[in-house]
Each structure stands twice: as C-alpha cells, then as structure tokens.
Image 1 (tube, rainbow, N blue to C red):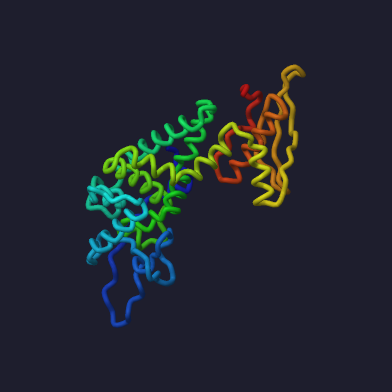
Image 2: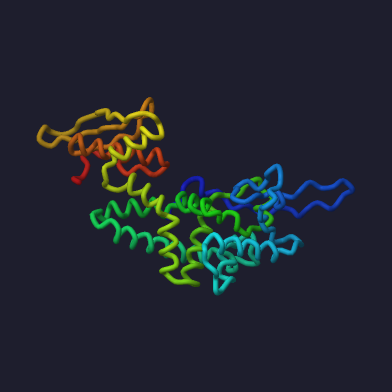
Length: 305
C-alpha cells in the first residue's frame, strides 16, 4: 500500500550504550519514562501503569516486559494465542529482534494481504450497489497506513511494541511502526485462529473507518453528509460556487467547489451542476477527514456516473 509522507521516515538507528554509573544518581531512562499509547519516548515523568518500551540490548530481564506486553496485547485483542511465539514475532520490530527473520516484517507482509482480502469481501457483501471503482476507493482509504495507525492507537497496540535501544533512546519513533504492527498482528491472528477470527475483529475495529470512507469516497449523498458534518462540527452550512463551465451547450461540464465559512475546498467537474456539487462535497469531506480527494479538478470532461 502506498505510504504517506509521514510514514517514510527512516527507521531510527542504534545509539551508543548507557553511560557508566557515577556518584550522582542518574535520571530515569527513556524506557522508564515511556508511557502507554505515546509516540514520544522522552516524556517528563513516569507513568505508574506503563509497560516500558523494551531495549533488546540492555541487561534487564526483558522477558518480564515481553510477557507483560504479550498479556496486554491478548487482552486488547480479546483472543488467547495457542502459539504465543506468533504474537511475540508480530510485536517485535527489527530493532528489537535478534535478526530480521525474528522480527514482524514477514508477518507484516502476510497481514497486508489478509487485511486487504478481508476488507474487500466485507465491502463486496455489504455494498452491492457500489461499482468496482467506488469499492476500490473505499478499500484504499480503509487499509491505508493512516487508517491502520489510527486504529492501532485506538486499540492500544502502541503500548505493546517491542523495540530496540535505537528507538527508546531517540526522542520519538515513526508512526509507521504502529501501522506495521497492526498488519503483523492481523497475520498472527489469521495463522493462529483463522479467517473468521480476523474478520470478526476487523469488522469491529474498522467500522468507523469504513463508514468514514463510504461517506467520503463512495457514491452516496455527499452533500447531505457534508451539511450534517459542517453544521455539527463547524457551525456553518456549505455553499457551492460555480468556478467554470466547459463544452458546447448540449454537452456542458461544470467545475464547482464547496465553501464552508472562509474555507474553500478542492473543486470537481460534473456533467451537470448537481453531479458537480456532489463531487465537490465528496472532495470537501475527504479534505476535512485528511483523506485523498476522490475527484480531480484537472479533468476537462468527467466520465458519466
């Protein structure tokens, strides 16, 4: 799946080991300060109930932390693994693994396919009125790195990551780690429990993402959805501005953009004003929800819908 700019950050590199003990008490380490559900590993005060980021090269009893994270993750998933080593691999970033084959990279590869297939079947069965093009756009939004990372954080999977010293000693770590672990955990669930276990959980976890994608990427009544959203969240009502017309009288195309308050959204072409307004509303919804816009303003004459 294509990565967003924020996901293309380089993996943190390993840093030097800890300084020798001195007579002055040393401050709490980053691993002591890292609280659950955070990307920043350099918080200013410890969280009493936090499960620490594991430093794979330290002399601590790492298995204690690993066991705690495995237990926490199974509680989040509401599933008890028959083969716990699968979940351990799914949670282990390459920086915290003895070698790359012991990390979650292979499981991430499988999980990406399982996630895509599960969501495709879900959309195919639940939205029979949608075209292949609509289903493709909805699916792409639901399985995007942004959506996977957002869902993983809502679940609390970021509490369970097992990473190395290069990560725990840096100020922060890339958000892509969390979206990657979401996919690797899906693969672990699939291998340990089967397709039904994965499907049941994804339908629960991704329900909001699917609804959002259907509202912003599908062929529903985008104007109605945008009006409800704008009035509820922005205390304003959308208006639609005609920007340009193109073509002969018998085959005109209209470029229209949505405006909410002082904010103008990417316009869209339509074969008539009603169609153009629906497309403009879809672009506005996508922009408001930080999704890719579904309709380009560069099209001279849009395809019929």
